[in-house]
Length: 179
Image (cartoon, rainbow, N blue to C red; front, side):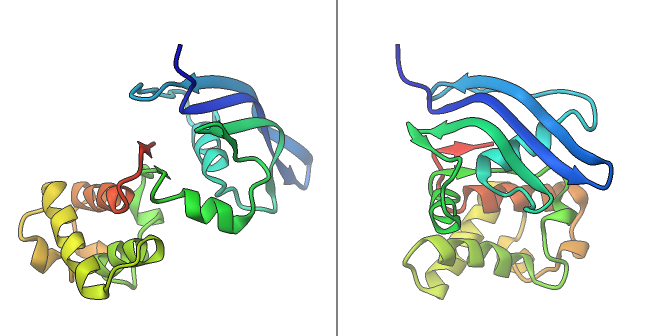
């Protein structure tokens, strides 16, 4: 049997509130093998997004924190990694496509700049090379006239197009795992 690509064991993620500590995720465990697809479904507020943010090390701290459990990606423990180690993991190794692009895309920056920034943060390429990759990514996700759209702001795109921009950003560094 092949070792899991991602192993989450007894994950408990809590948030500090005025009323006390709230467990948003409580004792969650699952494994994902290489090539396997896992869908996490549940009602609003059930902890789906908090689980993904915990895995990627993107919890707002404070008030959120991983109280207990283990998250292993390719055999390496993520819980306790430094911010720089997590930053190195995100992009080339693991990515996430957020459900609501307007909460993830910065409205004051052109979409091309946001894709290019992701590429430049993780790969040693020139800005011109990153721009060409960004055009290719927009084309890959089905955005017509990608050269022109690269210079649009998020509000100039439809909701579906903004979602495809988020997919392009998640794919920008060819991660081995996209959530």
